[in-house]
Amino acid sequence: MAIAKKPHIPDFRAVRRTMMAVSQEVTERRVAEFAEHEREVFVSRIKSQDFDSFDANPLSDRYRRWKLARGLDPRIMIRTGNYVDHIRVWRERIDRHTLGLRVGFHPRLLARDAKGQRITGLLMSTIAWVHERGSAKLPDLPVRPHWGPHFREMHERSNPLRASIKTEIRKRAKAELPGVL
Image (cartoon, rainbow, N blue to C red; front, top):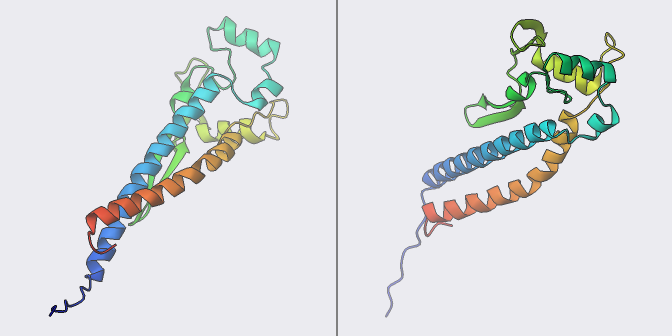
């Protein structure tokens, strides 16, 4: 005669805490890795001039000669290197459970002059915006979108990331909650 075992009812608070901790750790780590990788890809694409808008709107001969005469980099968006050097991944706490990440410039970063030394009164994000969207004050400045195209491509690359995060969370949760899941 077999003795019936009492069913095991897991401690749902402990399961919930474990699931939240595992989900948060895996998601934050994987998204941070993705953001750092995307920053590297974006900077590399600017340095290699790998945007359609850069080909469609090359530097004018006059401006290119001006840059070369001053020993500046003749590539688009890379005069002193200050622009690409300051593209970083910024962590932002959205609430106590959510970490937000963004690739871009620090919100208060000011642009520098042609020598890369004296700070101007313009925010670096303003310079990026003007190059991305144009400006009524500078109608002769060609629009050279690079943030938007990269962001759209990055969004597509994020779909497999979401699926792999779910898989990793399930695997880790099963390991940390044996017999429950």
